[in-house]
Amino acid sequence: MARKPTVHPEDIKAAVRKTGITLTALSLSAGLSNSTCRASLRRPIPAGNRVIADHLGKRVSDLWPQWYDAQGVRIHSKSRAKDIIASERGHRQKKVTK
Image (tube, rainbow, N blue to C red; front, side, top):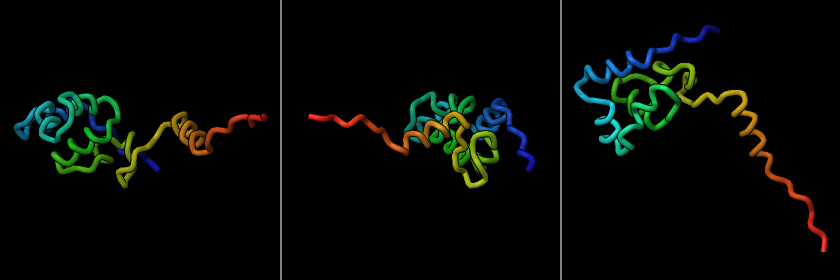
């Protein structure tokens, strides 16, 4: 199955600016840190990604197909997925004898 092409971060930034608001103002209006939306253009930050997508009337998977699946669920890297699986197993400690 072919992946959708990634939207360039500058294209997303320009689309937000065309609506008459900056990424900083968008972050602050959503109750986020002033740099959250700017940072979420370069790396996956779900809160910032969703604010931008909602503002533009798009799905997060349309803007960032490399980070989100069609349902909008975050796609983790293979190394991160291994960490998640390992943490779900729990930590085993040696038995302490008295």
